[in-house]
Figure (cartoon, helix red, strand yellow):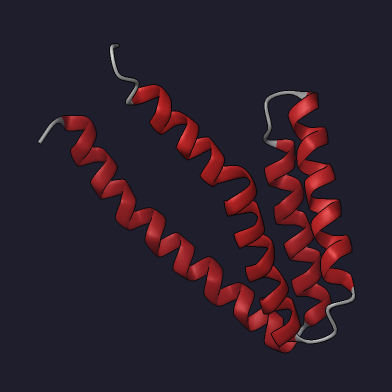
Length: 113
């Protein structure tokens, strides 16, 4: 294995452990203190948005999050939120990802190139 691969593999375990600990902490907050959970969720989202390199990308991320929040606001129940999230995912997959994948496939597999 190359040194970068070994480093990435060892860092992978560390990242996984940190993710499990973060999930455990958030799950506990969700069960015990919804207000604190929501505050932490918003802080984490803002952290990701602020990590964007340019103002245009930050604006697009903010608009995306505001749209998500608006769509989820009136879900009513946990089950409804799950159903909505799943529907939004597949809508995005079929409307954005799949066409991009198909276009990339056409470009990469053009006969005569």
